[in-house]
Image (cartoon, rainbow, N blue to C red; front, top):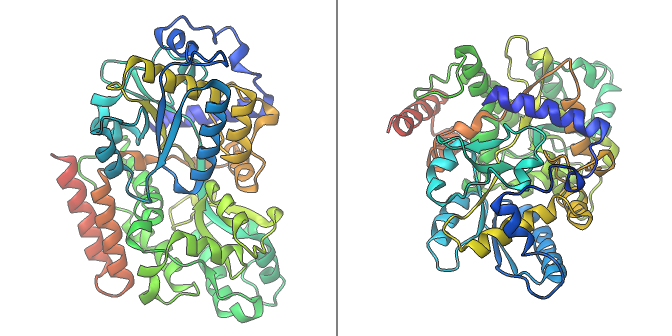
Length: 459
């Protein structure tokens, strides 16, 4: 899967550079498949629209945009669209509850191949859809054992250490700074030296700490038990030349601990308070200029820019790779990939399935829909319907594209799509909170991760 995703990212990067035109008007858009034929009957302003759409959204931070999209589509087509948004870290539970209802979601997300195994009985075949035709890389899908397509990626994202370049330049100007510019921070050793020196001189820099709070509120540990954990597990998969593991050794646990400890020890929040800190708290600290760095993804720009009193300008918001002390990490990039695959509920009526697919096709091919995607959701999409001028313009999306197009770096793929279950992640997050508060050693955290992984993967 890693090789497929790398190929897809390369293809998308090329397409975004040269421009692709509107795939809705190309020779592939007139697919004669049953989904395309059905979906056509669900659009238009003729007052004869059939079916309805119920989308269960994954990301709380973009709920308001999805509500606008739903209202716009209903206004244009007459097709009712309902959007319900699951709370942080509750998507699987919410889907499980909602899917059993008479009015079940017609459109939902699966988290890669692991998510597909949970929901394969509810995933319709999308092999003949226009959405699949429009993919720049046909490997950016969830494929069943039968070779059919049951999930289609709709966004490519990236995450790393977001930094405030203005604060960093202020530090580099100090006498005795451990580096002269961000260009010199290419590995963990240098990052650690810079961060610890900045923390010692935080008053000179006018900050409360280098890193934003390591949010360990139980519903907000995903940055650590999923995104950060992706890096050492990526390197273990690469070393063993596999795409999945039934038994994880967590051989690079110390590398994980390197960066996690750096976060914990160099922020403005005492370790004992981290269990009450949320991602929103962390992003607010960064937006207000109270800290210089925060680990998060390009989706966080909306959170940064929306904070009242935000002091961080767009041109100062940049990405740095998450360095952990791996050999050769000087050429490492940020983490780029997707865990978001759209699926259509195969248990829904034929009309509602067709209406749901028509809604997606409108969103990713019409001018109005693409404007929402690019400028409001700020997605980097994998579809050929988006041209050169239809790329997100926010600073973090630009940074993702910069890393995608940098041939000198190897970006880290999103291998966390193979992580066992949400319960595994929650147990990992709980153990990290206990470690941060002094209730567990890191060896105990490692033991929990290894044992829980094996218990679930070997079922």
